[in-house]
Picture 1: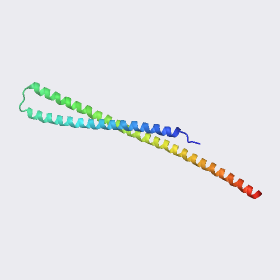
Picture 2: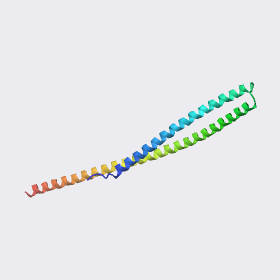
Picture 3: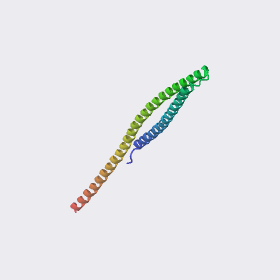
Picture 4: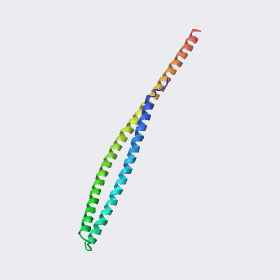
Amino acid sequence: MKPRQCWSIMAGKAERRLALIQADALRAGKLLEKLEGSQRRLQVLYEEYRLQGAGAGQLSHGMQDALNHRQFMSQLATLSERVAQDIEKARWALAGLQQQMAVAEIEKLKMKTLDAQEVLALEVLASKREQRSMDEVGLTLFNRVSLS
């Protein structure tokens, strides 16, 4: 008797699902790193323009330059806030993927365990059948010797 293929197929399916989730988590992690790098660059740029604006206040070229400078600083601040929101979303997504990964890992282990249990059960059954067969042969030989 052969073990059923259902558990090994389900284990393979669980492994493929786990691999997909791991790939998604890797992409999410890279996106998070990219966003954090963008946030750092924006902060540096904002600080440079802030310092430039403080120095340029003394050598003002006019009202339009000051207005443009403030508007650009405002746009940098808005962009920085948006990147911060994207970072937060990416962190939540990554946490969700890690949770899914844990569930998929448990499912994979469960299917592999069920597959191993079925193989073991079939080995025990085969062993019992072999023992029963050996007992029958032994009993038959004993009866022949006893009758002689």
